[in-house]
Amino acid sequence: MAEKANNNKPDKVKYYDLFLDTISPNYYPLQCVLVNELAYFTGSYALYHSTLYGDDIFKDTVDSKFGKKSYKIIRDALDILMQKEATLNELTNRLQEENSQRKAKKINEEIEKSKNSIADLFLKIQNYIIEKGFNLEFEQVRNMDDLLKFKKRLYKFKDVIGYTVDYNFYNEFYINTMSEFEKKKEYIEQYGEIVDGNMEKPRLDLAVSEPKMSLIKRIMIKIGILAKAEKQNIVENEQK
Image (cartoon, rainbow, N blue to C red; front, side):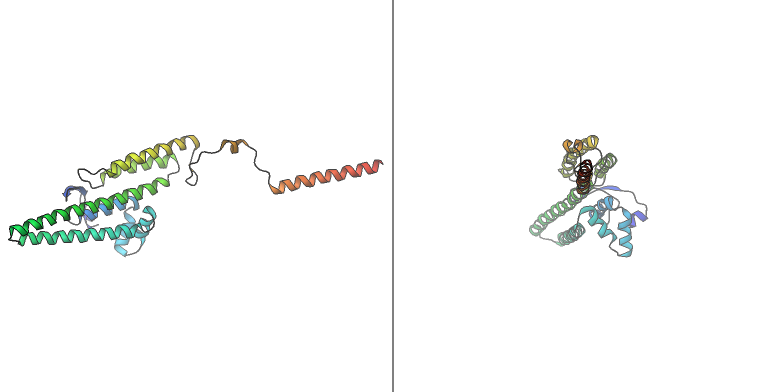
């Protein structure tokens, strides 16, 4: 929020082998990228309102966009990410003060492990956001307009993610989702808007068959038949 208020522009940086496009390169860059990804789904209003007033609007919005308990899962993961970065800072400080070459080498190995652990956790959180957010959003697509907007939103998400040289989760998710996209597109073109998320093909035999006769109608017909028979009996008796 502070960076937004200062009208700062996104900057490309690299942390722990992660390439990031972040508005806050100097302060909590990893966390800012991930929270920005959440805001991609929730909008900034919920995020800012809860930050300023300490209410549950952002929490509830996250749970509605990603599924129940998603807020707690992501929040706890972000806390662990902060702890890992704090541990890394401690190791870096120890290295600067260490005079023993042997001990310095060991600390360097711990630092590398710590960096890899941070990058790995960052990508796990990001993958969770991608999978949960877009899967739930895709389930709610009902017509062609929604479908085309979804495709555009999924494609543009590539501009906000962090990645490593060998990161491929987003690309694979995009390809798999586009396969489902084509199935949904084909259904909508053939049968129209999806009702209640049900993509079962309409049964033609039900479409052309006569509707089942209601109970009331069957009773009325029987009453009519009885009345007609009674009238016939009266006529025959009079003739006699």
